[in-house]
Image 1 (cartoon, rainbow, N blue to C red):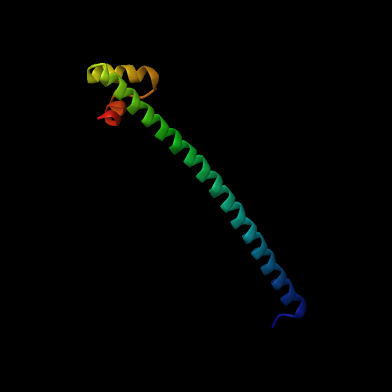
Image 2 (tube, helix red, strand yellow):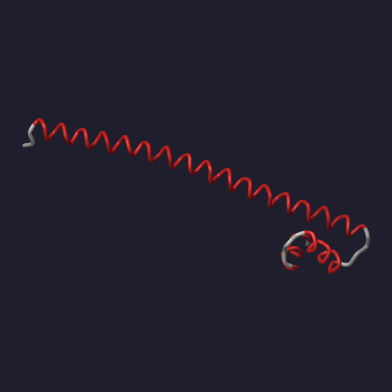
Length: 90
């Protein structure tokens, strides 16, 4: 059977572990929020990029350009492959 002093040490160790576990959880939540903000911004930028490509394609179509010409002109404005642009505007 542990002595009173040993029991108190175990309680203090347990409380310390719980404290640092809570701190770790809080830090993890903060990091998760930061990662979420970053991912949200990236997704927002990608969405803006796609919308820009679609608008540009619409304008170029109104000029009666071929699909290939449209894609080539979009490629000059956006650093994307032919296939990526084709997939977006098709």
